[in-house]
Length: 555
Image 1 (cartoon, rainbow, N blue to C red):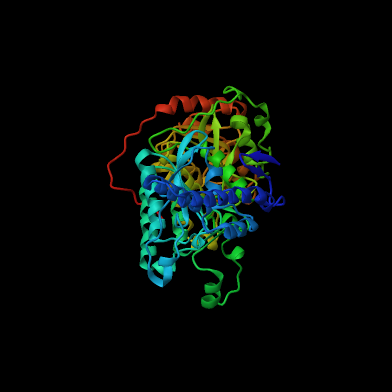
Image 2: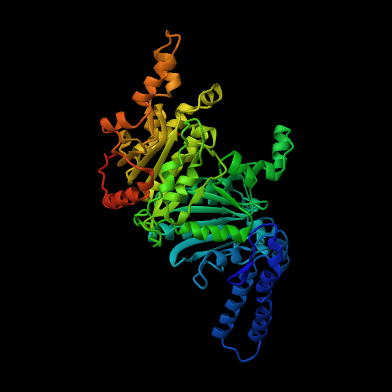
């Protein structure tokens, strides 16, 4: 346990977040006395009009800080959740939050809503800094109308999104909303569409992050889906288009919220979310760490974080990390952590499509993205899910000028009717397309297998790879030796000798090196040094593009 500002940090849900509610509740209750005192001063005799106006503003500001009121704040804390304002304050550097539209209220007069107004209208918006770097954020307040989206609520969000694009700063959305505000009808739907439009306009311009910290249902789910990264909090956050009641009525299926749209569902099964965290505090702290890897916009470079890890460090253990038996697995993550600065790797989607590993790290203090086949899972084969996972990651990195390092050990694409019927051709083409269109520095290391079309797809020299290397253990061929020999020598009864000949001729990196398809065969121990040298050489890479309105990526 340790302190983070005014909050006490507990590392896991076993230490329930409800244990910090006394601290949080105190923060909320501190606004009660000021309200009473200000009201008393306001009605005291002898006050000027200006003083009365200032007093009224102070009251309204204090009321805005209370959101839906103390009772609802306590309910929020009992569920193990922070309030919208607590989340925003914890996300940003202390004292850096500048709030917009504190006094906004909804304009609806139907169904008695004109008598039911909450200052702020269910969302806290503004900008601040994370580790000294500017970001814009909105935090939906479930204590006020269940965080439901009204016309004015949407307008507040749209304003900070417009500002973020104007100045070139990321947008972080903290989602905790019951959905559209039914009383406002089409105005609420229009508000969602206004946000969606800005999500699309912001895409590739500024990084967009969504942190789901409560319910997010119906049309509301499409804004996180349009952002670059979506994170969830276990046990308290849900994403679904239709809730369990509708599913029961329409499909006659009994399903819980957690089963339908919980964190485990979306990080393991659907791939909608990129990671899940144990509680609000851990989630926010991890987002702060994550932001350090990203640039503020497509016009800037990611921040440099200097490290004591020498750029010319060699790791002799890498020379023996690949098993002698090519059918045996090893952990690609171990190679990654040995190559990068201080072994610090922020993995994206660690529980989904585990046969490929993607994430951010630093080399020589500079942010890099890493894509690597994972031999521990299905031998690192490419399938539908892994292709889509890696393709979207590569496109993000290309949009924001983050170099791509690819570690290849791939036996090919996964065969079978399930993959073919579900569109492996179309989905596999997404990864091919992403690598082919990328203009950032691309460095590829073949650690072992690079077979068939998967060799081409994994950032090969033929897809404008800048530097392509192989370890001595590399095997670059159309297919594995056994399968190739069965085709070539199908009329020969004893194929043992033929298989040995094929291995000697093709199951090594020499033929590719002789043709210039790889730039060098390097010792694994020297890989880190070589990559960092290449990153320096490629730091000013410029690649002219053919004019087009936009591409037509296979979706």
